[in-house]
Each structure stands twice: as structure tokens, then as C-alpha cells.
Length: 342
Ligand SMILES: Nc1ncnc2c1ncn2[C@@H]1O[C@H](COP(=O)(O)OP(=O)(O)OP(=O)(O)O)[C@@H](O)[C@H]1O
Image 1 (tube, rainbow, N blue to C red):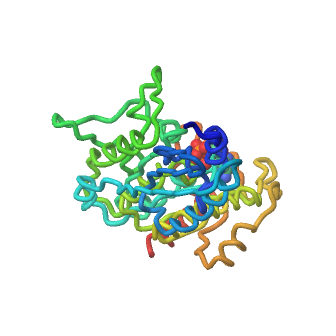
Image 2: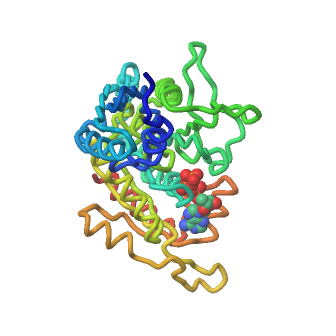
């Protein structure tokens, strides 16, 4: 006989419930495979990436409580199937890359791509062989920031040759996307496409590969981090409290997947007037540094809001390449030197 328990109510709970330490719900992670309702017993069948295994008990307990509070529910079972991220071919291809760093942020628009591009140019200017991959599927911006108008060449066997500019090797997920027919990628399909894409790029010998991640802390980010065998993460945040709260989620994610945080950057830390060069602290200033120090994380530096940085990004020449004498270039050069020394 049918049960009185409302499936819609269960779904509502799952839709609202945030996975601990991650800015995502089970539904947005596509983790709910089935819901069985029999008399007063609800059994949830979940599929999760093994990166969440350390939270298995917390997830089970919290779900039992939340779903158990629904009318008519007497018992809650939670069955989890752990999914491994495929790491096959990619591992071998990255043997030509000495160190791989991801640049991450808790939310969009904090200047992650701006920091990635200038840091990568600064690193190359110091004589290292550097690659930069724009994996920000939500807003790939490398084409604009580096003034790249044409896609990369491919070898006859389908491998992709990175575009070279300002002494860097560049590749963007945007090169895969047909602008007129944007692909709506979801969960596992997206992860598979990204992994395959990553594995198909011929980077050659690199000292450093930077990956500009999509903002946030969902399973796309986890899958990329695991597949790329990342050596460290750079976290970008603006000084606003809310932005740093989001950044803390990203930091939590890297702790979970055991990737060390090699640097925290405060972007847009103050405004420098292009006319008089006077500095104004629009979003407050120094909060990210203090928080990083409290958390024992290396602080890499502060970048002010600077017109030349924005213009460089829009015009296709990152500040470090176009204004080698700017004080902000010095900041990026110092950050690069610190990262290289790690
Ligand atoms: N320090 C800065 N001074 C002036 N403009 C900046 C600075 N940092 C970023 N910007 C500008 O802010 C906008 C957003 O920056 P950017 O694209 O780097 O952010 P993002 O975090 O990568 O965003 P998303 O990941 O959502 O695409 C860009 O127009 C960029 O030029």
C-alpha cells in the first residue's frame, strides 16, 4: 500500500541541505540516485565522490535527522555508493609538468582570472617554463585577457597544441565551446569532458602549470583537482567578509582533498586613483591577510583595484606584460617568486 510520506517533502529537504564543508546540496551534486519509501521507512541511495568519504558519518547523521523530521517518517536509512574519479591517461601526460597549481576562489568575480594571468606572466618573466589552463567553464576569460582570437592547432592524432603568448603556453576550455551553440554540461559528463580535455593538451616540459578553476567548491572542482594531481592551491579573495567566508569553503575543500594551500591573495584590497594615485580602502583592507595568518596559511600579497589592471584584462595584455614598471607588477613578481620558491 502507498505510504503517507510525501516524496516532495523529502526532496525539499535534500534540496535545501548543504553537504558539510562544500557549497553545494546533494541535489546540485547529482548525488541522489533513488529514494525508497516503505511504510515509515525512508531509504536514501546516494552516489558521492570519494573525496567526501571523511564526512560520511556526518552526512548520514544529519540526513537521518533532517529526513526523520518529516511527517510520518519513523526510520531513515542512508546508503552511499562511493565513486572514484577516473585518473587513467592523464597521469602519464602530466609527467612533463613539474608542478601544478590551481587558482581558486569561493565565489565568482573576485579577480581569480586576473590573478592567474598576471601571476603566470610574472612566473614566465622570471625564466620558468609556464602553462596556464583556463578551466573556468562558467566564464572562461583567457581569450579576452590574452587577446587570443583563434583557437589552438591540433595534431593529426587529435592532440591540442597550446597557444603561445607573453612567453606562456595557454589553453582554455572556451576553445572547446562553440559560442553560437553553448553546451550545457552537467555533473559527470562535464567532469569527463574536462578530464579528457586536460589529457589531450600537449604541454611539453613545464616548470609550472596553473589551472584557473571555476569559482566555487562543487564536484567539478574536486574532479579537476584529483585528476590534475595538484601540488598546491592559491586562494583569491576580496577583503569583504562575505567573500572571505566563501574563500574559507574553498580552503575547506582543499583540506579535504589534501592539497596544500600555497598562498592566499587579497585582491581589490584598495583603490588607487588613476589621476592622483591616492589610495582609498573601498572594501576595507587587510582582513584576508589577518584571516590567513590566523589559519596558518601563507599570505602572498595584496593587489589594489587599479585601472591599468582592468584595462590590461580587457585589452588582451595582462598588466605584468604591458606595464613591467608598475608597482602592481612588482607585487605579482614578488608573489611569483614566493610560489616558485615553494
Ligand atoms: N585588482 C583589480 N583592479 C581592477 N580591476 C580588476 C582587479 N581584479 C579584477 N578586476 C576586474 O574585475 C573583473 C572580474 O575579474 P576576473 O574576471 O579576474 O574575476 P574572476 O574571479 O575570474 O571571475 P569569474 O571566475 O566569475 O569569471 C574583470 O573585469 C577584471 O578586469
